[in-house]
Every structure is written in structure tokens, then in C-alpha cells.
Length: 404
Image 1 (cartoon, rainbow, N blue to C red):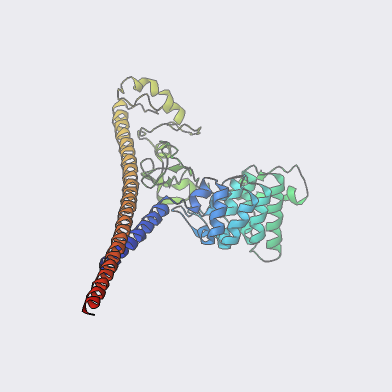
Image 2 (cartoon, rainbow, N blue to C red; image 1 turned 120 degrees about the horizontal axis):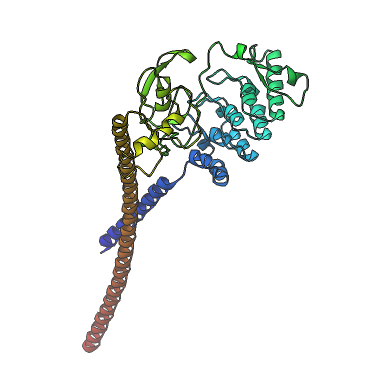
């Protein structure tokens, strides 16, 4: 009997331990990372997470972005959030993302508040001399990003001081900052094209959340790529063309989006593409405006059910356009199907985890009931044994009295 009760207790504790493990796995799967919180500008949860575990500030995504990088993309980031992330991982100040940008570069391009930029520089003043992949310092970025005079004055002054003190190597600026040094508060930023360009510089990569062509959101199944000609964020489907970019000094074939590919090719038919909703200026015979003007001529021949769901640019080659558009519709359907299947798998996994937890709880209750029942039965058996012992003693006493 004792062995059986002991076995029940062992089973009970194993079930309880299994429930705890399942709950931990489920909660871990549902936990949001610091990267996601920073990207969504959820400052309260981000602060709580970093305070609980400062190592979360070292998370990095596929694009080389860390929580500090993401917070710098929001111009309204609270100062204490920036301070908290820097305290948790100061090295993030000098880490470049895949676009060659450190947090200060991103903050300048996002026209962030002066206090946040000053805080970034205060912790590591040499960041004002860090150059982007296009060879631009934060001060030069500020002059092109419509930054305030206060920000521009501070960046230029700090950079000049560091270079004059020998803390950073001397460098000829690409911009004319004489007006700033003279104290002109109505500084007009002057770009010296003769100094800036021996040829055109490569564009800075943008970190958009959606493809600029098909507008689908980037995800695990739809990776973000960048056009080397315009710097836009595009998916693999719409950036699978390669062409040399001699005008920016890249002689080997480079990844470009299909819009730039059309614009750069000479004496060839442009490919059909899905229209960009955002405004985009394109020059040349195959410009985007001309493509849109041709839409009405081809739309009547395109009878697919998706024809009215999204504006399109078309080419003069109707048959070629029709085939390309059908292929793009199939690719979009395939992406949507993959997303739906992945969503169903996640839902199924969550339901399965919940079912296991419910079964474990039910099993726990069952064994608790059995254990209580066995305990009651053992108490009854003991009482019966005591009654029998009393009866035997009475019989013996009666027999002894008869003998006497």
C-alpha cells in the first residue's frame, strides 16, 4: 500500500513539473523581443524588459539593427529610453547596420530631437566623425536632412574640435560650413558639387517595413533587399535584376529594383511592374509617368480578377506585360498562401500546447483525488485493525476469567 501511494505521488510531481515546463515554453514563444518593442516604439515595455535583463539591449536582427538603432528611427523617442539602452550596451553606439549607419546617423536622418543626438555624442564623441557607406559624416547628413540649425551647429562644432585636437584624422569636408563657423544663425547649407562629386555617390539604404513596389510587408518569408541605384527597400521578387552602375563607380553587376533596371537599360523593352503608391520621380524614356499613361490601353485586355485590386504600370508590349503581370499575381498568391500556412501552423502549435496543459491539469486533479481516496481507505483499514485487536483482548480476558 505504501509503495502504491509513493508511486502516485511521484506521478503527481512529474505531472506538475510537466505543466510548469509547458507553461514556460508557451510563455517563451509568446515573449516579444527588445527589437520588436523598439521597432514598435513600445517604450514602457521596452524599459521594463531592459531593466529586468540588460543583455536584451545586445539583440541584433538580420539587418544589423539593434534596439538602440530602432529607437533612433523615431524622432520622439524619450530621452530616458536612449539613456537606458546606452547604459545597458554602450558598444551599440559604434555598431553599423547593414546599410553602414550607426545610431547617430539614423537619428540625424530621422530628424530626431537635439537632446537625444547630444546624448549619443556625449557617450562617444568620436561618433560625429564616423562616416556612412557613402562617406558622409553626421554633420554632412544633417545638412542634407533639413535638420535644425542647433543640431547642425553642434555637430559641425564638435567634429571640428575633435579634428583640431587630433582625436580624429583631418578630413576635407564635402560641404561649405564657413557660414556656421562665422556664427550665422540663418545658415544656408551650400553643397559644393565640384568637391562632392567626382562621380555620383551610392545612395543610402532605406530601412522601410514594406516593399516599395508591391507594398507587401517584410517578414521571415519575405526578406528585405536594397536597390543599389536608388537605395529603396524592395523584396527579392522585385530586386532580382543585376546591372553595372557605372555612374556611381560600380562596374560589376549590382542588385537593382525592376524600376531602376527599366530606367537604366538602353534600347530594350522595360519589364512590367506593380505600381508604387508613394511618389517617385524617374527620368528617361521609360519613366514611371509614361508607364502609367499606357495603363488605360492595356487594362481592357487584362481580364484577371485581380485587375481592379491594385494600380499597375504597363508597357507598350501588351502580350509581354500580360504574361508578367499574371506571373506576379501568382507570386503574390504564393506569398499569401505561405503566410496563411505559417499562421495556421503557429495557431495549431498554440492549441496543441494548450491541450497538453489542460490534459496535464486534468491528470493532476485525477491523481489528487485518487491519493485522497487511498488515504481515506488506509485510515479506515487502521481503525478496523484496532477494533479487531480490542476484540481479541476482550476474548482473552474472558477466557482467563473462566479458568479462574
